[in-house]
Image (cartoon, rainbow, N blue to C red; front, top):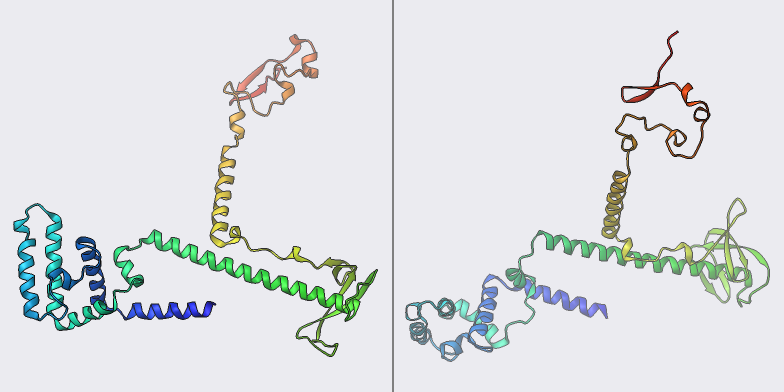
Length: 315
């Protein structure tokens, strides 16, 4: 199903690249005339001449219609000025044998509905943001497709290994056997010929216990073989989403660290040191040996350099 669509896409691209600048001007002019004069209006019907009209007949029809659409006879009408300018282009195309032949081709066969990227690019010129958005979506989509491909491949590989282990443990009839059986599973190219298994030269030791299959490691540990080791594809795992989440977490972590109070904020403005324990603060509910003694015997405290220092008695 995908191959015909691919050929159709290539054909449309080839057709689009075959159109030159003059063709795109004809497309633009046809669309503009249908918008202003009515759907289905052609160059010939607008001039009211047949498609077989001679150059002199076209020139005569142009002079007649241009007198009606002349801006001097319709002052202040911007649409009339646009139609008058458009009429001049139509007349120039039909009076030129080469451009008229090109227009007659589209006149007989129809103007293409799908007009290629160049046609739409002339109307909508994407900016840098649009281009970057497109590239991000495209690259992320391709990465997600690769994730899906790898996921399916790994799942098939696990199912193949499990099947080979059960086949080695249970035999060709695949009848489950109770208990554990240590088997050797060969990896590589394998084919079956009349119930004879032709194996590759790479092998791993495995243990089959019921329906469970384990890889027997060198240290004797058994690692289960199941789909839990395969990472499923997720949009969150694409590079752009991962980058956004990483930047967000980093900024959030920085803001959290900046919001934490520093040690200087705990210091009191009256010069007390922030290293004073809770037992030394008033109203802490804890009685220290110094507070339990006679208050008259306490040494007065003096301030020096904004820190608490006890006065030393001079002898």
